[in-house]
Length: 280
Image (cartoon, rainbow, N blue to C red; front, side, top):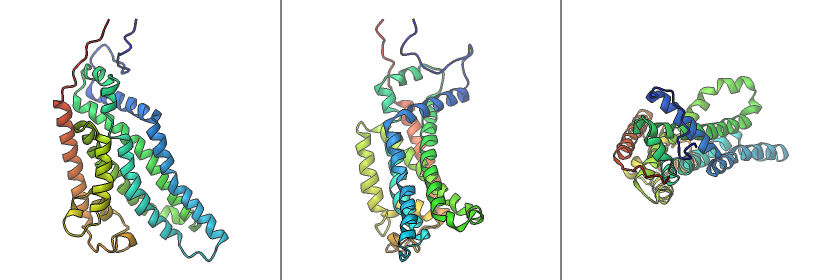
């Protein structure tokens, strides 16, 4: 009789390589997250900007006197919905419980019995989160951009791909850094979701707009400095009057991702989850 707690990862007669184990766990993680209701909630939230874009375009056809341009609508959408909301909610919904759920349903015990390093297991779980959240948010952003700028013609859309690519890079950087941080919260704290909520909507959403030094310690400040919607251009940020250079922002985000990921791997490697005895 097959052991119900056996791992779904298929093995060859020889022990699998770390890369083969990484691919198998990443695929399994992606499938698990795809079936999770939190992924559906994220997809519904990510559908909001394109829906608002459709509404803005349709309203302008009925109310030609409406002066808010498509460029302004996209700028507001990217600044408020993507940079300040969705890239915080995605890791909060999909990354903070990456390991906690495995512990609760005892599937982590099965993974740890395999000849795969703990660091590879954590990296593969994180890769599943990145694949899913990137697919949802990047698709949403491309749709939002296309709907608002389609009236300028396909030639203009093609020529503006570098601008869209820069916006996508900001989203991806946010998913990576916030994802690594919230994964670490999940490893360190029992109430990781509450800690993540407090961090996201108290520290990040507040301190990013406080003049002085504190805003430079937030991820959001550096994401906004990376964005082509600079502090001078975005109305919601204009009162701050300060901007970190793009090179400094990119360096901060890269170092933050590497440092937080390294700490997460060390915590995961030294945490004793214990192989529970199974009743026969």
